[in-house]
Amino acid sequence: MSRHPSKSKFTGSLDAIIRPLVTVDIAIFTVKDEQLQVLLVKRPNVEQEPFANYWALPGGLLDVAIDQDLNGCALRKLKEKTNVDTPYLEQVGAWGSNNRDPRGWSVTHVYFALLSADKVILQQGGNATEVAWFPITNDNIQKQLAFDHNELLSNAIQRLQAKVEYTSLPAFLLPDEFTLPDLQKVYEIVLNRQLDKSSFRTRILATSLVEPVTNKMRPATNRPAQIYRLTNPDRLTYFPRSFKYNEKTLKS
Amino acid sequence: MSRHPSKSKFTGSLDAIIRPLVTVDIAIFTVKDEQLQVLLVKRPNVEQEPFANYWALPGGLLDVAIDQDLNGCALRKLKEKTNVDTPYLEQVGAWGSNNRDPRGWSVTHVYFALLSADKVILQQGGNATEVAWFPITNDNIQKQLAFDHNELLSNAIQRLQAKVEYTSLPAFLLPDEFTLPDLQKVYEIVLNRQLDKSSFRTRILATSLVEPVTNKMRPATNRPAQIYRLTNPDRLTYFPRSFKYNEKTLKS
DNA sequence: TCAATAGTGTCTGTGAGACACTATCGA
DNA sequence: TCGATAGTGTCTCACAGACACTATTGA
Image 1 (cartoon, rainbow over the protein chains, first blue to last red):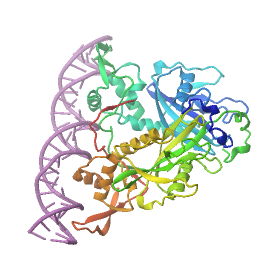
Image 2 (image 1 turned 45 degrees about the vertical axis):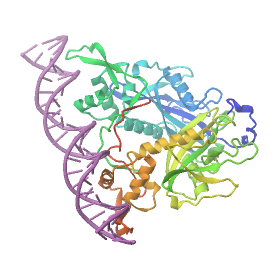
Image 3 (image 1 turned 120 degrees about the vertical axis):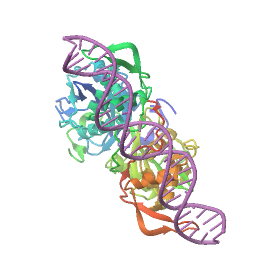
Image 4 (image 1 turned 60 degrees about the horizontal axis):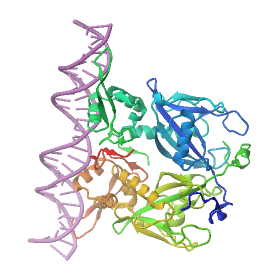
């Protein structure tokens, strides 16, 4: 296949086809102040831009001149807002219809990213758009967002929570070095429920997810905690069972 | 939001944006001849159509005039090929890049559908395109497909197999009435490995997935089998644990 | 010594897997 | 009676959850 086929012999027949708008939106999550938070941007108040002054997921139009692929587009938009370029990034899905954007038929591609709060430098600038963290409470955001972004965010949260039940995803929300109580706390924040300490530790230590940083303890006014780091910072660990495994049927 | 916003006040600014091609491709699975099979169509041998005579996943361009949303587009294309209009349908994800289609930047939205073979009427007609079932052997298709469809299909198969480990998905590959040995057989075909009869039956009957059709047995030259049907034909059942749950880490 | 948090041990329950066993049909 | 497949019972094992217990620090 040709890489830049703009003058390919195949282009002719498709020029007449009406193409929908194609966008990417990202739910960027972090844990700050003992809460799961998501990054939102305020939409500009300018002519021809719908949902002026509404808060929205960061994202926007795919740029066929810049973006090589969909993931690259998501990474570009993430970097513009947070200056982070190697997050945990996962595609949640695509939503497309003739009525989700007043400008016409549009398809958006939703990603979620997980970041440690200490790695983010919020880019409050550029075109004067505001950028801020908002807490997720009761597994949702308490705010009316632009477009169908409430639904998109809700799906991203559900995906996140579902995978947290049986994977090491929350580790990507922490700094490089952390204690097991830190890790448990992040699980509890994302899942919005308490976990048992003993079974949590057994489960984590039964895998090779983390390794202790030898002779490094977190000092405190109580018993100090062993400091760990990820054995393989790019690997997602799957646990043999889900944390809770006693509900049976869900909607198709 | 306006439903048909072609004359909206917001349209003006976006006319200059170069938009990628937007398509939908579907991996339509069934079980026939004791094999998992996928429906493929042969690409036409006409001017300006890339990959002439290659087999491909059914699908193609989104039509903003006909399709209300992405799922609707997938259902339309499914119906065109199989005449089925209520399959199990699930979005696998989106793949978009500047080099996956020689005609230019394109995004495709991959779905998989599960059908009982007895419900399908293959539409061998119209524009003389060939349509046929191809078996999945060794968890893959042994054939060079058009575009990046080998990769798309491979992802659909992986998603299917992963979910079969802990859901009732294979039930959608069977006729309305079936026996438990039938159901176990379909699991084994999709997973490409044997399952233990006793634990399989315990697991299925511990849920309300199926109900017996009273006094209806499948006659045979041996002990006849009880016939069951789905308690709720549109519901997907999740089992408390995966069939196999002893592998630990996978790539991020 | 005490408060506070880190970390361990022990017991229970659930459900998957292995596998031997019984049941029921037609030929 | 026998072959073949349907269907059951029993035992083991892994792991989540509950919860009581011990360990280690600074103030």
